[in-house]
Image (cartoon, rainbow, N blue to C red; front, side, top):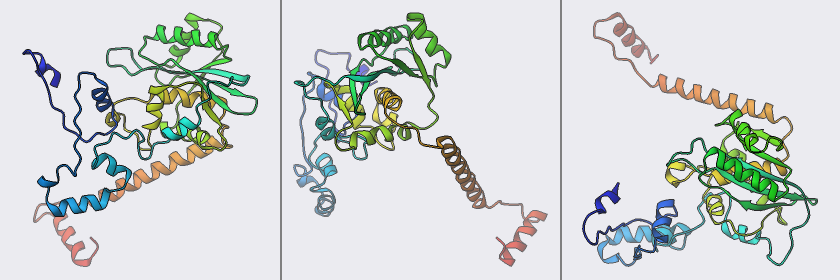
Length: 317
């Protein structure tokens, strides 16, 4: 909306002043070649701040990671609480001078966007494989904004290019239409539909754990900047509105390695049912407690008012 105010005049300009959090709009502004960046630290503003405030804020944040952002105006790539970090991803970058081992299984994973309009999310498309030693490899990321026919064509092309064994796709949004769209391009492609019965974070945690295992269990064959940006911003309390993006590439990555490497927990269905039951009980308990805190107000002189006063006198309320 602010851009509409810049459409007149010979040299329209805007000044954006902000804490440099690594969110989408800040990254876009920094990457824009027409943006002039001026950095100012809290220390530079010392003359305009109350000494007591300055002492407290420095005591709290100086020397910390958050202090680099809040005090020194640095854009930090790693997000506190993220399931992945850049240092670890660099350690797991497959060396360019080494050939990837022979892979026993390769899948193309798809997280289809619910729509294909101008403001639609991306469709996540990730190719991943597994070798005989149980190590995983990210081979390609072809995610992007596609119509249904376009993402189906892209996925089939990757399936053929990498000689994959199967295409895996989430069907929560598209249902049977996801498979039907793929089969319009290739009627015989092996296909597995997966359903997201649990939250994104719960699904992602076992895959993130594979990245942390020593020695490395998962490697990136090449660089995947946008995918890795999403991975390093994917926190346990991820909020897509605050982050400015939907983690579609991460979702596709998770589906790929869930198919290839994550062993289902014995009795997973019973565990999920018990967890959902416990969550429902907690929600009902919270509702009862909230209702108990509400004290009704009755008209003076009514029977209800008299009963309420009697209970108060006797200590029942």
